Length: 501
Ligand code: NAP
Ligand code: MG
Image (cartoon, rainbow, N blue to C red; front, top):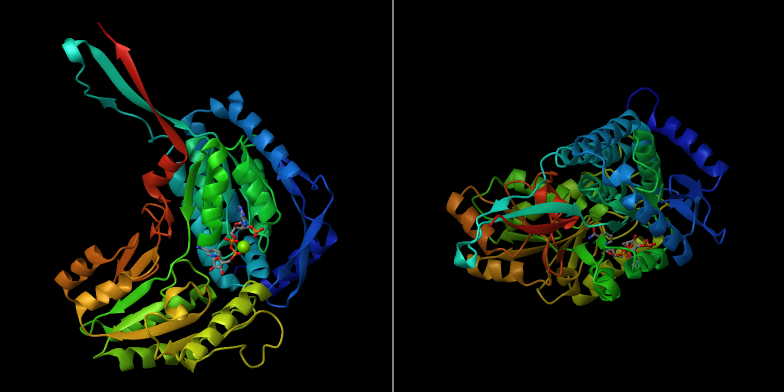
């Protein structure tokens, strides 16, 4: 944090937020919900109200979709050159960079994760994402194809790429600004107009992103932000004027989205839950592996879709790895994210605290044993804080081994035979990611090939970059974000046949 401290920044921002309700952003204007209703968004470190935010209902969503449609059809956006679109994305990245410290503190206040990490992950990550996708409008085109028509006719066949239209982007609370950027950047790079629906717990950075996009020069209506509950998201998904939905969140809501989008068969991409295996072979650098296993589950309080929540350490090194991870868990400093000393902040909400705590109870009842953690850290009486937690003595059928907890809870299981290991690692309804630690090259690549996961990390964990595709096998989702694949998600391909005979 440069200049003034996070605490001083937080004081200024909370005073500003308390002064007036946060309106929707539709057609380039901040406006209250049509019903006039608002809801409270909280600071999870204190449980206190941070701001009142407009509660959109289906009529507001209708209004936002109409604005997006007008913007999409408007020549100002539709016929903007690829170069100009790229420049707008670069300008937006610059504006985020200019406001980086404030955005980092705003995200910390609303989501709970420490400000030094929101700065690094949410803000720097979003800047990188916008700059990366600014490179695509000038490079994303079609091709000419060597077709073979009957009778030897002379044909020119070529493809073009067109924006898919109005895109509804529904994002969760665990990485609010990053998840918005992952969707908004490629959607705008492809030339779509969007309606962004942030999670009810964390609407504030999305609203600010919408304002910065206007300031950057995106035409009004190209990026609309509707805040509210799942009802608003559901209205967007069912809306006949929406051509594409991109969603990140729970597998349960992902399934609802698939059903609700069927009316106009809109295109759908989904980035859903995970229960990722983190695998340690006995020949690995065990210190490095244990450190990565710890950060792989505890980072962001475990509220990460790729959290390495199942540790599979070989029986020969199991005790050593589990001891090191447990010692590291005990050393992590849980506290208010405004303090530079905090490694972990609170969970996002009371609901999430109850869910995580409920899973710890389930694990205990099922016969697993807590080595460390399991509840509220001493000395943190208010806010939604939870201790980093490690379970052992678990077995494959247990719910803590199968279900996504989405909290700082690791379950450690030993293995002996590599074929059995691959089978248990793949024995999951999810397939988002996996980690492998070994110094044996062949073993590493064999395991990477055998694991059913959209991302595999070898001797590293949780590395993510806008250049590399990200998404899940099985019930972890549909499609891939990042890279060329994300541009494809937001575009249609047209094949044009020209007779030259
Ligand atoms: P969620 O319900 O899946 O919420 C994600 C987003 O979907 C939010 O913007 C939410 O709006 C919206 N939404 C909810 N119901 C909808 C519907 N019927 N149609 C369209 N949009 C809808 O997630 P959650 O309830 O906050 O968290 C529950 C669990 O989901 C977590 O414990 C975790 O296991 C998992 N989760 C996974 C991820 C991930 O990155 N894979 C992220 C978050 C949560 P509202 O916020 O207004 O309800
Ligand atoms: Mg929900």
